[in-house]
Length: 229
Ligand code: CTP
Ligand code: CA
Image (tube, rainbow, N blue to C red; front, side, top):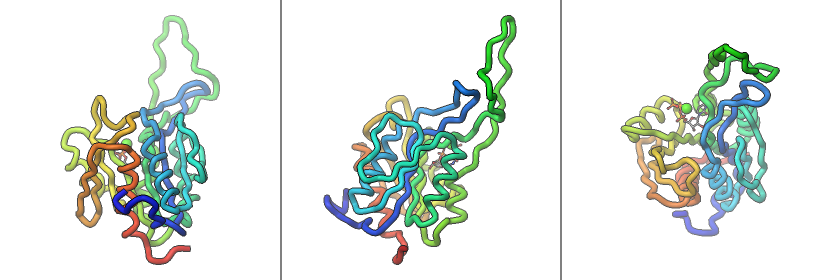
């Protein structure tokens, strides 16, 4: 990262990172999911640990190995992610929401497998909104002075959408990726602009997700509260 290899600028700090996608069950065998690989969140967890932080990684389903020295809390749904994050964030210096949280979940969970019926079309699936965890954390910080970071994948006018989202969420930093056919999802590489609530914009050139992760921590560290528990 920009602070150079071997920096321990997160020593004594506790950071919470969310990663991967949530899964919202419809019945015992089906769920509503998304294409998040979890790679960016895992890179954030690894780099924070390398910089000396105690790291809690709240992880949706991924195929990635647990990073060494990181406390991994597996979750399924957005509501489980919310519970785990709020609990871990109580004494955290920073929370980074890299997870792809499902905006909606099936309104009803069917306890038995939904079966086909000959000659009948299926019932439509009604969806309801999930809680917005980033907005909630930003508005009501579990610890005073805690730094809150969001991620946004956008298309079309990426920067304008990112600025609007930063203001709407109320977080300190928003990492904005442009998504398209071969960008961001599942890839080991990423390109982004990091927007700060103070108006600064930090472009991050196309490169490894580790490099983007280190740039996020470079921007988090000067914003951390002077004292910590
Ligand atoms: N996020 C969250 N809770 C949700 C949805 C999103 O905490 N229910 C977080 C994500 O982890 C991410 C940020 O909010 O850090 C932005 O997610 P995004 O899906 O881009 O924002 P939304 O507000 O859901 O807007 P959109 O309608 O564009 O999906
Ligand atoms: Ca969303």
